[in-house]
Length: 119
Image (cartoon, rainbow, N blue to C red):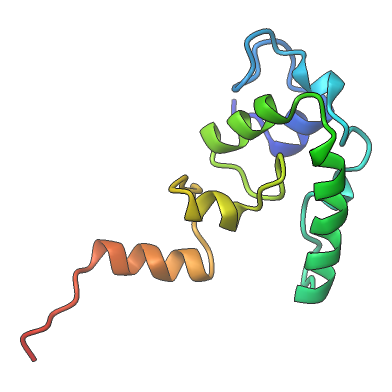
């Protein structure tokens, strides 16, 4: 059974969660109870996303488990804002998400299909 992002962040995933040596890093996360800052609402406007992520970043910057969270997000190909990184940030660093959308999907298509320059 796959672990959902909400389970990872709210501490319900249990011991041994990916990205953790002992499974309890989530219990010490600064974001506990503030998940609305880390995942986009349906049809979120770009300006609202920027404001939401700025608030999330302030929480992440002082989080005692920032490294564990970042490792979990990268290893599990998570969506949302994790450890000061959006999925776009992780993509630009070379970490892939499971089902790319938008810009990431178009970039993945270009990587897989070399352009024909004979025309």
